[in-house]
Image (cartoon, rainbow, N blue to C red; front, side):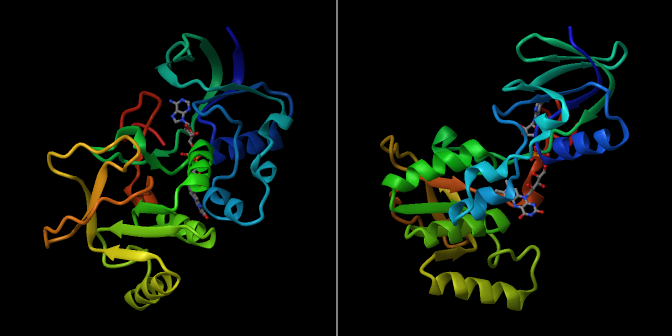
Length: 257
Ligand SMILES: Cc1cc2nc3c(=O)[nH]c(=O)nc-3n(C[C@H](O)[C@H](O)[C@H](O)COP(=O)(O)OP(=O)(O)OC[C@H]3O[C@@H](n4cnc5c(N)ncnc54)[C@H](O)[C@@H]3O)c2cc1C
């Protein structure tokens, strides 16, 4: 059983920042990191910005492994035994620690339909899946009008894809920007060709089964009860940061992060 001076659960930017912080004061203590994603820590912001322009994929890595960290990737911490200072991962391996950091971040809330046909855009794998879909798809629906939804809408539009955005709020980023800025953004996106459906929510089409390559959700104008036509192309569901739930090592909302 590995026994680390420091054990970090989570493989995101917080975990990487912790590794750098630890190394500033302790150059020799052993550090273990358990990360659910198959990748070492990377910068998330480029997934919705730079990588859709000229930024190279290689530039996103945070290189925490250069600082002498043992990475246990593609594993989810499942059980914490604080008395014996041990964590068990989902492959049954036990990791002992002196100090433990929970850096498990956030997980988007999931819609009650669509299953794996919807991309809940957050990870490098989500980016790569969407990128592949852009090679064949022409028209994309984005659910959510916060930072990530609007950035992906801009990225797809810049890459000559048609985009329809749907979100229940009055306008793009209306939870953080004043109304005149929101109006400016709505107008700008529309001028760039994005179909902006403010005050709209995505709902399952009642009683209708869709073919496998069609998006399972349909866009519904809030309050008016009109169902739009099915939209070709994949659906990327993007929730704003404020709508994320925190998940701890047991996968329960609210017990970590
Ligand atoms: C597309 C995108 C663009 C963004 N752009 C910006 C921006 O421009 N500016 C800005 O300030 N912020 C931006 N953000 C937000 C910023 O990236 C986050 O605030 C930051 O990534 C949070 O890092 P974190 O490590 O705390 O959590 P997370 O990024 O959520 O990472 C947590 C990691 O822990 C793993 N994990 C969870 N549970 C377990 C477990 N039980 N066992 C093992 N591993 C587990 C998860 O798989 C995940 O890899 C963006 C986010 C996204 C998704």
